[in-house]
Structure formats: C-alpha cells, structure tokens
Image (cartoon, rainbow, N blue to C red; front, top):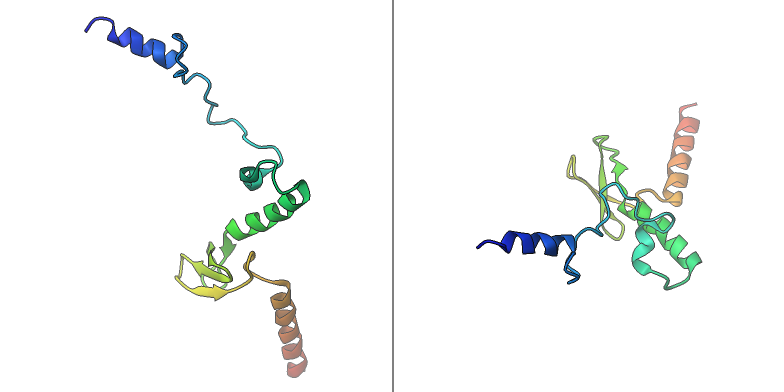
Amino acid sequence: MGGGEEVWEDLMEGELGWGLGFDHLPSPTTKRTKKVGVTGKYGTRYGASLRKTVKKMEITQHARYSCPNCGKVAVKRSNVGIWNCKGCNKAYAGGAYTFGTPSAATVRSTIRRLREVAEI
C-alpha cells in the first residue's frame, strides 16, 4: 500500500487542488464578530436598528441570573416569562426577556416603603 499515506496528506494539505484542504480553518482564538454578536445569524437582513434591538433582547434572555432563593447564578429562561433555577430547582415568573421587570422593581420598592411607614 506504498503511496496511500502521501496522497492522503496531499489531500489534507490541499496540494492537489481538490478543495479538501483544511489549512483555511481559523484558529480557536480567532475573534469571530466585532459588532453583531448573537445577531450575526440574521446577516444583512431586517435592518441595522432592528438587529441592534433584537441583540439587546437576545443577550438578556440567554443570560444567567442570580437566584433570589439560593443565591447561585443559575436562573435561566425556559419559556416566555418562566425562569428556572438549576441550583434549587425553583421556577419564577418574570419578564419575557429579562428575569426582573421594571414594574416588578417599582412594586418591590413601594412595598418596602409601605413596610417602613407601617413600622414607624
């Protein structure tokens, strides 16, 4: 089977011109995107301003959040408005794209203020 290894090496290096060379693959430390991030999958479609808005939403919905019960950063979105903690296995109701909503923060601060007034 004399020259089989040499032909295979030539194919892998792309010297025979068959388009099978793997020397064009990027190194593992190559930075892939500069601005687009997770919205690179949309390419040039839908317009830049819409892609920027979607980028903000997708980053917040794919992020992990701190659990109010166990304190671990293990809360992830499972469905729209449903957030599950992998640490303590509790489910929370939240926003569609973020764990906490601005209206929930307002309600929390109002309740805290009313409790302080009731104590005095």
